[in-house]
Image (cartoon, rainbow, N blue to C red; front, side):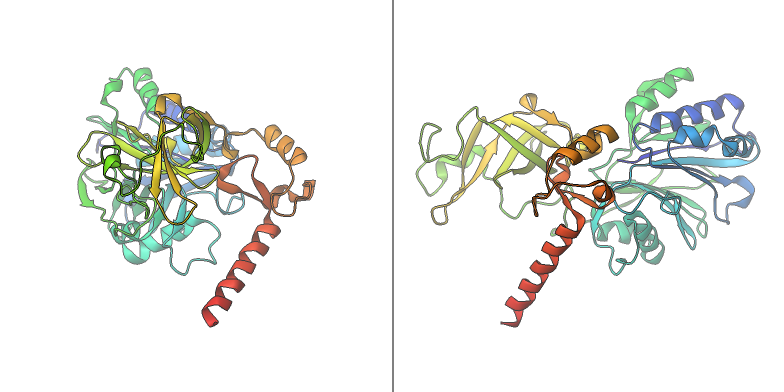
Length: 423
């Protein structure tokens, strides 16, 4: 869960003043809550729009960056000709924590920072360690619209094309990104509440905070900065992790239960795998606008592989990829094939107890789990040398395995699949 933030100066005759520099640094400090593995600030100079941005990077918290020698240089840059400045706090999900893997990534004319995780569609970029780095390359090769249409995963990006001299901003439904457009400055932050706080500190109206519209690319001309929606991102229907994706096993609406071609069962029936009110633990996979209603449908899987569904009138992107526990309100067989009938559970969002994921834990808590848990594959205790090569299953803190065990299983599955094909 990385954090993005930035300020774009709309005034041709004025630079950022000392107060505005201070509030930009406030944004950096608050972004520490979203990512502390590495930090960066990069900026575009008014008189050098056709060259790559200036970039400052450091390991660790954004707080350290602005309080280092680089912070003095950033302040000087903002007060002397900066058109726009952006920052990133990295929470590493792919690739080791290093200065080389700190955002933004620069490839030819594209400078790009990213919040989210790309699971597929990056073509032959397997040799690239970080998905965001591969995304920057894909954007340069195919253009931002084609690249984002192709990838599978969660994203909010801010990029700069030095050839076209354009700032590019886009997100999908899985990652938030907010802005305030004043007459003098455009403010951008991943989280809404911190941005409202900055606006209050500056004496501006916090209710001006808006969402960047999901599934659109915003193109901003640094010479005439204003937000302009230019392109709608169109995903293929078979794409994954997008708001248009429907799971392959379609959920049956409650209104259609009586039309199912098999006998309806009640919760009192002993053949049910779950009883009404029983607590189920699940992992949220995605959400989609539910038909013509005002609600969004969220779905995921419980520990037994059964599908859970709940509805809410707000997309809540922070719920995606979360672990939860809630009592079952309703359930029905989704299909009847053999004796093992799949189930769909309905739960109520007000009853959800959100469980901590691996990313939520402190280093002390992670080390305690590592010391007490066994590998889910080889069932051996972890040792100190294993800490940097763990694989967390569905981000569940209690489902961790040795990296080499996971790779061995994947290799065996690949061999088995190849054998089946050859037969």
